[in-house]
Length: 320
Ligand SMILES: Cc1cc2nc3c(=O)[nH]c(=O)nc-3n(C[C@H](O)[C@H](O)[C@H](O)COP(=O)(O)OP(=O)(O)OC[C@H]3O[C@@H](n4cnc5c(N)ncnc54)[C@H](O)[C@@H]3O)c2cc1C
Image (cartoon, rainbow, N blue to C red; front, side, top):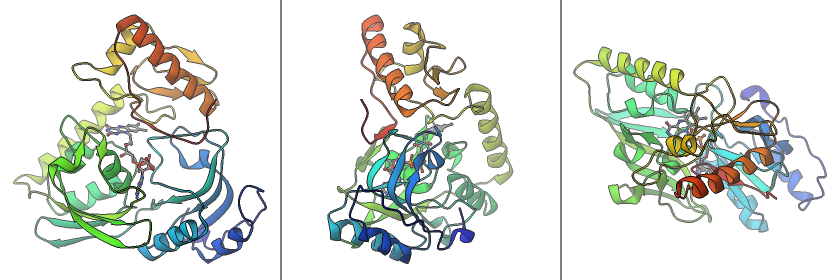
C-alpha cells in the first residue's frame, strides 16, 4: 500500500461503531473500513478492523488519536504486524497502522553517530541506511521483520542486543495529542518490553551508533546472521517468530520439544519441526487454531516439564 492508495477509502456500514466516523476517515491519506487484518499480519490471519488508518505523518497520527479519543472509540497501534495474533472476529474500533510499505519513512543522520528515524521505517531499511554510512551496532536487528516502532515497543532483539542498547530518545504522542521526546535509560526496558505511558503512540526516535572501523565486515556479519536465521527458522511459512519468551534458565524451543510437541498440529496451525518455538500457518489456519495451539502448548509444557511459558506475541481481539 503506497501513494497509489490515496483516497482508497471504502465507506461501509459495519454496524459496529458510529457510522459518521466513516465519513471522517476520508480526510486520511490512507484509510479503510471493515479492513481484513490478515493483510497486515505475518501470520496471515485475523478478521476485519472496523477502521484502519495508516498515518503518513505525525500530524495524521494526531488526527487518528483525535478521532478515537474525541468519540471514545478504542484504538490500537500496530507496525509491521510481525508479533501479532489478531482474532478471527477482528478488531472493534480504530487500528492505527504505522508502517511504510515501500522503502521510505523519515530517516536522517543528524550528526556523526546520531540518526533520527520515524516509527514507520522498516528495520531492514534502517540497517541499509546505517551500513551505507559505515555504522555498526545494528547487527542484532538483522532478519527481524517489522518496523522501528514495533521494535521499540517490543524491545526486540537477540542475544547480540536489543533496541534499548541503541536508542537515545524516544518520541511518542500521548493519547491527548502531545508530542513528547523522552531520553531513554537502560532501566526503561527489559526482555521484550519497553515501558511507555499508557496509550502512547511511538512516532520515532533518535539512535546512537558507533562508527565501524571495518564497515565491510559489519555488512558480511549481517549477511551471515540472515543466512543462519534462514537455516534455523521456518521462514517459508507465515508465522510471528518466537511464540513464547524464554523462561529464566530455559529455552522455550527446548521445553516444547521435551514435551513432545514438535510437529503438533491443530487445524491449519502447526508447531514447526524446524524450530519448535515457532507456530506456523501451514494450511489456511485461523487465529483460533493458533490460539488453541498456544494454550495446548502451555498446558502440555507445564504438565510434562513443570515450567510455565509466557507468550511473547501480542494477542488482539476476542478469542474463545
Ligand atoms: C520470522 C520472524 C522472526 C522474528 N525474529 C525476532 C527476533 O529475532 N527477535 C525479536 O525480538 N522479535 C522477533 N520477531 C518478532 C517481531 O518481528 C518483533 O517483535 C518486531 O519488532 C515487531 O515489529 P512490528 O513492527 O511488526 O510490530 P507489531 O507486531 O505490529 O507490534 C508489536 C507491538 O507493538 C505495538 N506497536 C507497534 N507499533 C507501535 C507504535 N508506533 N506505537 C505504539 N505501539 C506500537 C503493537 O500494538 C504491538 O503490541 C520475529 C518475527 C518473525 C515473523
